[in-house]
Amino acid sequence: MEFGESAGDPQSPPPERPGPADGRPAWAPLLAVCAGYFMVILDVTVLNVAVPVIGRELSASLTGIQWITDGYTLVFAGFLLTGGALGDRLGNRRIFCWGVVVFTLASAVCALAPDAPVLVAARLVEGLGAALIVPGSLALLQQTHPAPAARSRAIGLWGAMAGVAASAGPLLGGLLVSTAGWRWVFVINLPVGAACLILTLRYVAASPRHPDRAIDWPAQCAVVAGVALLTGALNEAGRRGWSDPAVIAGLALAALAAAAFGLRERLARSPALPPALLRSRPMAGGALVGLLFNFAFYGMVFTASLQFQQQRGFGALETGLALFPAVAVTMFASVLSGRLSSRTGHRPLVVSGMLLAALGLAGWAVAGTDTAYVLLALFMTAAGFGTSFALTGTTVTVMSAAPPAYAGAASAVFNTTRQIGSAAGVALGGSLLATAGHSAGLRVSMAAGALAYLTAAAVARYSVPSGRTAATGASP
Image 1 (cartoon, rainbow, N blue to C red):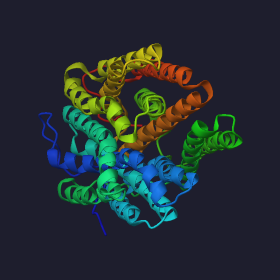
Image 2 (image 1 turned 90 degrees about the vertical axis):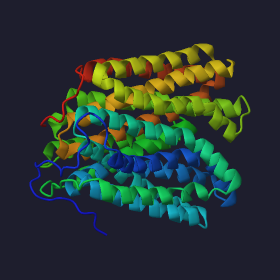
Image 3 (image 1 turned 120 degrees about the vertical axis):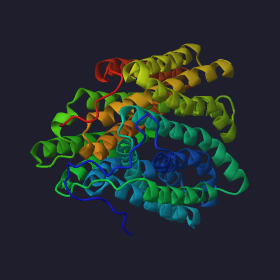
Image 4 (image 1 turned 60 degrees about the horizontal axis):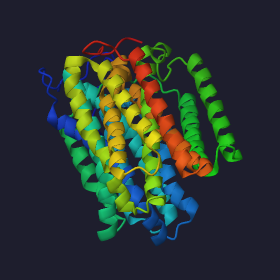
């Protein structure tokens, strides 16, 4: 199958199929790109409710159950930078479409899996498909919406789509598992994937290729190894504790892989990202902000989920409903920030979002575990709204820092740091609850999240451009 791309001059602009000049997003390309991202996020959140049932019906061991979720995360996080590099070299639309095909076919295998090993293997392939989809989604948004105002609104809607998927996932998962069965949590990906592929091929213009840019495979292997080892070690730290030999070994090997990557990048003729770009304030600062707010938000969601189930006796569906305020507001906050950015610029929106989220988690840290749910819902809403309110501006900052030729790689760096932040937040929350007890562990976990949000606000004040529109892509 060929998803045609335009060759020619690597520095030439992409084929014209731009969004309107008045700041409105082009709806058909936007829907196509967001459908792929929606599918990836929904597959994560909808599965959380189904995993216990899957384990029982397939007679999976505890390790097998863990790999159903963790295997996907490891491959997804590890191959993001590779997916971004392939998109920049071979065309982002081509790689995005291949990712949709891989993800959709793997979902079909998951739905038909006769046993746990087949399901785990298919989930690993799903993670690979997701790693090809996500970097391309942002790169294609930048391609199809060249005007800064239209791009901000499009990225706001892209973030809102993630909010819809995150909020609907637990509820949809609970409904499907209790009625049609767990296999349907994978079946729903099939029509979404087919629609995404058709819309992308029909309405998204072919992306420029840069065949002269060689992919540095030793560096890519170092990234895959480093991110997978770090994510795996962080996942295990939440279960085994930070002093476990396997966790220590994983962290040490991840550091070694990172050092090898850094050395290779200094010597490479064609680095994954130009060193000057990695040192730029918007790129490095935006990626750090993304890591910090994912650390805080997903650490809160994980800790709150355990607290609701283990201390308040909520079931899986009740927990999904209890967490709904935190994720439901994200869809509105992303759209709102995308609309406001043309008036205020991104910096005040990112900073105020992080401060609001910090206030929410600080309030929960002070209130403790015995607080009425209504007040906890208010704290969660503040954190969810603030995080999503900052997402649009942070994303635009990172993507605008990179020239179009490196859009896929920039998107991959941003999403990789966010994945690492999520894994670290979950690991810290789990280990604190296990070692310090639920009351003290929850307080410390929420306080750590509030501190991460405050740090993100300070970094954003320094790194997010203050003007109403960010640069459209500086040279490295």
